[in-house]
Amino acid sequence: MEKHNTKPTAALLAVSFFAADVQAGAGPFLGIYLQQHGWSAGMIGTVLTLGAIVSVLVTAPAGALVDAISQRRAVVVGASALTVAAAFVIWLSRGFWPVALSQIATAVAGSVMGTALTGLTLGMTGQKNFDRLYGRTQVANHAGNIVAAALSGAVGWWLGIVWVFMLGAAFGVACIVSVLLIPARAVHRNYARGLAHEDDKDRSQVHADSRRVLLRSRPLLLLAIVLAAFSLGNSVMLPLYSMAEAAAHHGSASQITAANIIISQVVMLIAAVYASRLIRRWGFWWVILLTLVTLPLRAVTAAWLTATWGIVPVQIFDGLGSGLQSVAIPAMVVHLLHGSGRVNLGQGAVKSVEAAGGCLSPLLGGWLASRFGYPIAFMALGSLALISLAVWIAQGATIRRACDTRRDELGKMTDIDASALFS
Image (cartoon, rainbow, N blue to C red; front, side):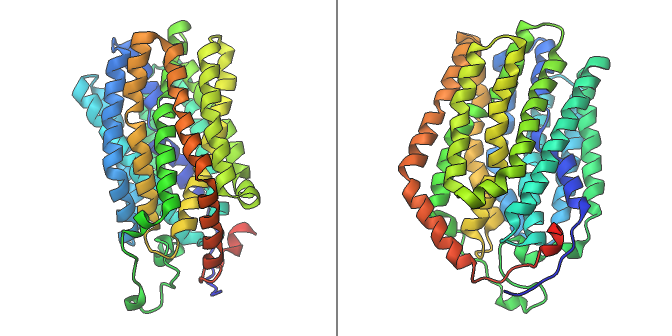
């Protein structure tokens, strides 16, 4: 295996920390903010759905962009700038179209940021240790969400929820500063796109596979289908549950929303710490199966526990599933596509299909809540996980066999010596 020394950098972890607000957006707080200004659950669901549709359309092209260009830090700068602009739009107007445009900008920023962070991480550590470093970046990301949620709750209480959006703008600026601190030479161009080829070698020898490599990977297609069904039920659960709790306990909307986020993010952080170890011990299939089980459990708990303390078990299930997925999904895509030169396109394509399910989630959840009430909405959304479980279990042997075959192939490829990152 060819050696290519690299240095660890705190700047990547700082980017992931501040990118938390860029990726997550202000969805839960935006829902409460608009609800306080007379928006119905259906209208809130509609405006969130518009942003989600844009996310479906741009996520795969964003992955292709990260594969195509060598200045991947510039992608992070652009995504962060969009977040800052969106925050100021919400600050200035509560009209339907300004808010809708801000959500579109936020959706673009979040989609681009996710694939950009994957490319940066892969370019610094290579394939073999990607899950280890990416697990660390996700720990930083969840820590960023915890800090942002805590600050948002405090700011919302003292100054009003509208100031939460200014906090998001501040995180966006900090993200720009952090990514510019990453030395350009620390991110290897070819490894960042999933090509096992040294940067200083003849570029004419570097050829990415056809984009059809995505369609030829059956495990990748199955993963995308499973995540789409899961996301359809899961995406709206947090903002909908925050709205349900705020409606039942008037006067503490920002604190309830912040508590929802903080509890789940603390559990996500813990899950991300151990995700790499679980993947290496059990394999991708078993870890992802565990995450799929969490949605129906969360839905039942949300439907039956209306007391304020019910947010604890509801968000623990969310944190466990999302925390493990945040590491396992990107790591599985890298495992399946490394060597093709289309890793980030693959990341974007899987996220795009997942977002296709998620973009209908706010509309479906908002409509169900308006017509039948919150408990029925939670149960209906949670039942969608049964589709994911059925596909994943039925195709388990195929997925595990493909992952084992790829493991042998990856062992023969050159890789980065990333030992300095873990010393």
